[in-house]
Image 1 (spheres, rainbow, N blue to C red):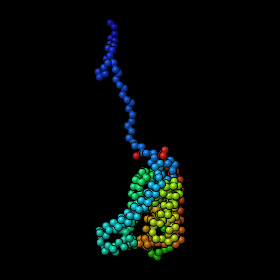
Image 2: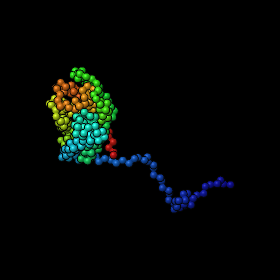
Image 3: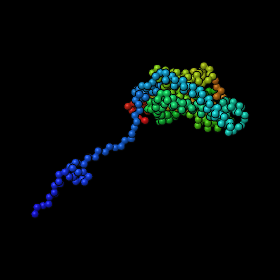
Length: 346
């Protein structure tokens, strides 16, 4: 008896009941891992590959008049909004406490005889941060991360390292200055602890806001006008010094040199972190030092420096900048735009 053999299937039929007429079932498409959908940023809105930080807002759509308009609009908003926020905070503080009549309270507050005056000033200057971010988005149609560094974005490890080195420099200079020019008494002024809370919580915000606007937006917008990094560094430093009000030549030079050094530092390291750190520590140490030696109000009223005092402070700026550069070298930070290493997705 012959062994059972498989019977041949009739032509035109398939083992799959869903397929008839001899057609073969379709092969399934090879599976691919699902990838998140990403929207590519318009290359025309990116800075040029290899551009230094002061030119990071300059792209294929940049025209000189738009950059000038952005800078003027930013300064106009600064003049209007800073004053309004200052008045608003002082008015709210007076309404909640009513210690004296409003005119007397306002005069005391703006002289920093009351903590609410320092709080109002710091919060008012902090509006420079949203002003800068909005101008980058609306006027330049660029991503706000380029305002902070060529990474783009904040390089947090570098910022923390610069806060440490700046603390060493400015605390040391404050101690030396106190020894060389003793005030005659050391002890916290009246109401110092409430002042200290305001200093710790809001002075870093105020200092960061000035750096983001002056060394960030203003320097980038003016630098993109002529496509020369030095132009943005120099002009933003002059504007920064001029907007600090009444000051003698030594104090003006002091602030101008700080602006120039901070601008050069931003250019050389490719971001705002070192300038923010130096500005924060300079202000915090100065206010705390005044609060335990003379008074916050005495520091607020300073409109002049001797050349020796100015020189000591400039030395502190130079030391802080030198240490920040050294840290940047050790961390091997890049200081120019590198589009190949940057994720340009939104």
